[in-house]
Image 1 (cartoon, rainbow, N blue to C red):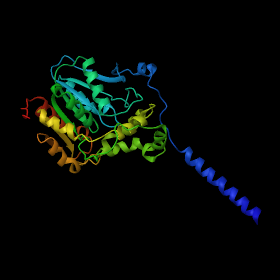
Image 2 (tube, one colour):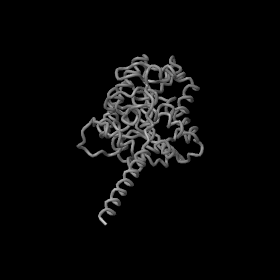
Image 3 (cartoon, rainbow, N blue to C red):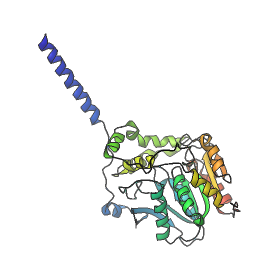
Image 4 (tube, rainbow, N blue to C red):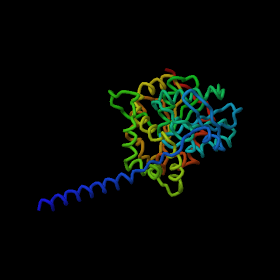
Length: 323
């Protein structure tokens, strides 16, 4: 009887071990590629420039034009997310600049804290390196809203128009956190073991109100997940996002013309949850809510978005609000 129980226990332990091994074998780590010189030499479109924290990938067209649009992407999808707006700006003869922020796309994934200070510094260095001295029309999508807020707070005299698209940063953040927050290897490993990481590419389709027209969007994102350091950059960014209330109020006081686009059906950054903060912090903001669009209205309502952007904002002079 004792022998039977012992065999049963051992058998159970073996079964548990097999079950755990099987579970562990399902953990996916997409990161296989290093962004080194060989990688950069393999990229045929766009350019790279070495800035203080690493190489930055960018595209820049019509550099001699007086009107400049600078486009900052969001939390994880890199600068190709601006394709429709970028191409429309070029077609209209405007100077257009878009780039991948550190930790995303083709730009380097440095071992640093990914916070607003890093990103504002990256943009400032990029503009200076490309000798862009004219005031810029600065667009920020989703998390890019935090970046352009940080930049406009530091360099208000460099902004012609500040343009938010379904921006992050207007949420109410409970004080008390330590920033920038550190991310350990254990944190990264734990994140990679989650279903959220495993199905992150598929999850990008939920940014759309209707994803039928965007077949392959998730596959394109999968390619961006292959670069080593991507998951760490995402975690660090998420943990280093304090309140931007002071920055927003300073922007309003500076008199910079501020505009904001929002997809009516955005479930990523819900307008009804941040609208009060938006108007309380920047009372002079002009808000455009686009129908039949989710988190990416410039893609789902391209014609409407471009009409407002180019025919109502970029083309016109807007009186500044006196502080």
